[in-house]
Image (cartoon, rainbow, N blue to C red; front, side, top):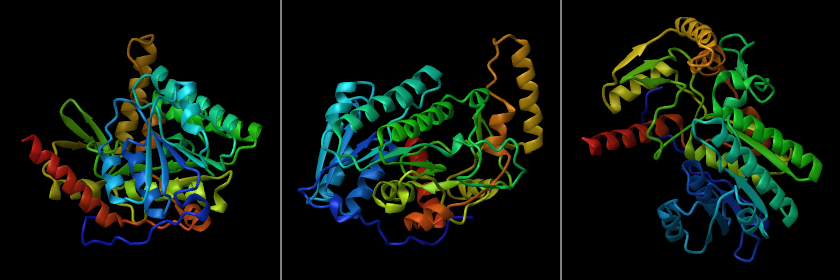
Amino acid sequence: MAPGASGAQETVVSAPDALSGPSQAPVLVTGAAGFIGSSVVESLLRSGVNRVRCLVRPSSSRSRGEDLARSFPGARLEFVEGNVLSREDCARAAAGVAVVYHLAAGIGKSYAGCYLTSVVGTRNLLDAVSDAGGVRRFVNVSSLAVYSNIHMRRHALLDETCDIDTRCLERHEPYAYAKLKQDELVIDHAARRNLSCAIVRPGAVYGRGKPDLTARVGIDTFGLFLHLGGSNRIPLTYVDNCADAIVLAGTADGADGQVFNVIDDELPTSRQFIRGYTRHVGPLRRLWVPYRAFHLFCHAWEMYAAKSGGQLPPVFNRRRCSVYWKGNRYSNQKLKERLGWTPRVSTADGLARYFAYLKGLQQTSC
């Protein structure tokens, strides 16, 4: 779908009375200075939540939060500097909060780094939340990448009932592996400590502040963009729509103990996305590679990596190839039916905004 006229909806999520008003318990957002986290803070404020506690790293920029404070003068934004790897910082952040939105995660390229932040940090936060008491729900923000489609046919429907990737290590993707282990930890802790929880798994989140194209379209390597999608639908979700879904998971009655995938309506194909990019942003030096050809390349790479005794890492492999480029249909029906979510920004409008943002970056760098 090419970007076109605005189709944005002006509806906003509504918070229960228990979460609104200056005298009520605050809501905690970890990773609040991040790409999605800052939009979650804004969505909370739009919904009427007036006390938001933001856990941010000392090095994180507060400019977005300061802008929001000026836009919502009746709200109270509290910034707590800290790190989820510190149990003391987690205890300070969790004290007296009503709902926790956990977005802090490891996004590096090493297993140790991703596991440390996403899993160890989450354990520290869960312990702090349970020790503090009074938290009505813990919302863990995961990823659509934790699913496996290795045994699914091309273009089959992927939804919340599909298999989790139990062999995620073979994908050589630290972020997805850490997210899978994080989900397992949250589910286990919630059962043992009687904690209400919900897990949100966004698709490819895009919007202003996300300069890199999603890998579900292709890979930028050696100065050439390998376009790997073709007719595959890209599971996009505009950052504002994703933030609204995350907020609802913490406030809606139907969210307790549930998993929700977040994908927008009217998803473009990879080919349509690239056409929109070249039309509105500029030319892209690219090479289209059919899925079956790239799958064979990944198989050959795996075999060579195995023969090398680990000297060549299996960064290209069939399991990852399948997850990102095999091609699936996606459903947001559960999110709509249980939580009443609807995309606030249409895909056409979201892509128009995104391409304008990328064009601006390109002009600034020239």
